[in-house]
Image 1 (spheres, rainbow, N blue to C red):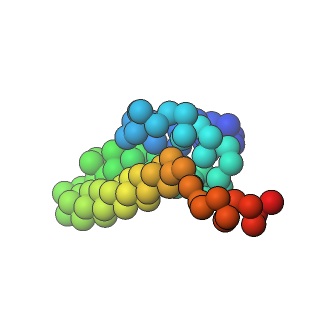
Image 2: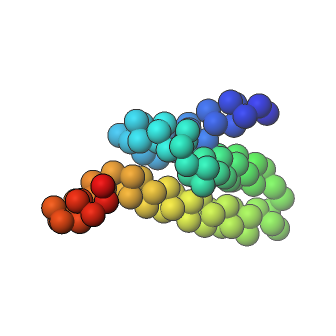
Image 3: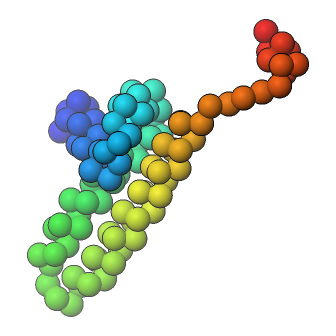
Length: 100
């Protein structure tokens, strides 16, 4: 899979979970390698969860539980990254002067 295809797959996974955050997701995918990796991992975990449903009964439940937990963790990390990206930092006037 090409890098562009991977980006689109990861973007699609994030957008399915956070459709109102389209713009922020697209910005982070370009500028934040960690966010890109999280979205790519989410897409892979979703695919693995679908594949786990076809496994033999003796391992199916365990694999489904593992992939569901992984997806939940990644969704939480992505949500946190989106919240942090949407924070506007406000400093004191004196603090702003010292940055110049």
